[in-house]
Image (cartoon, rainbow, N blue to C red; front, side, top):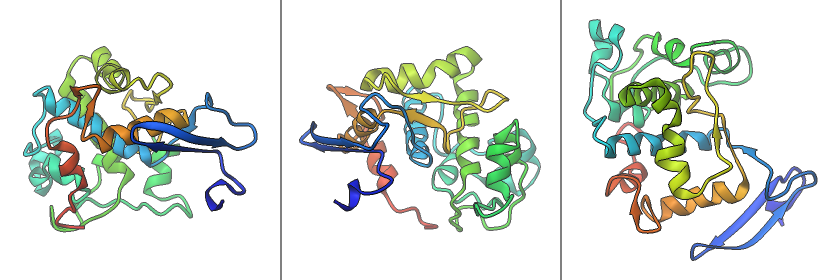
Length: 225
């Protein structure tokens, strides 16, 4: 009952890979796209996994952005970014105009804004939850894919279509970078489908969508956290 009270939009219950119950709030149905906010970060991490599986990225990559190569940010690895332990400054408070609200609502190039931040902690040693990091991860995997149009189609081709997430829409910023922190819309059933996919360790209908062991690695506690 607590899950289906005031403000509830959708609840989908899956058992043994099958939907066994669902309920929707007033004005919402099984066809309503729902904004995932920070659940998008996990989807974005899975997209990184598809690019890793394709051989275009490795977790030990460093010197991730050109300006970083000239200072201490050169030591930040892709694994540090995935673990949100880059050491970069980023204010995730939502009560005022902070880094995160400025990035999401005012900055045309979200990854560029987040990537301009200086180091304020030791790389790999300090955990800092950061929507800016998710935006930068999107820029990194899009650059790794290479061709702009292919990169824009990548989430659909590499993840959403194999899982049957036909409702999924991941938005970009004005610069064309996917907002991997926040702006994925999908129906409740498709969000449940993604959750089931993680329970199946990145395998869907017998197809290995993510590298073997990648979901287990995602679940591991990061050293800095």
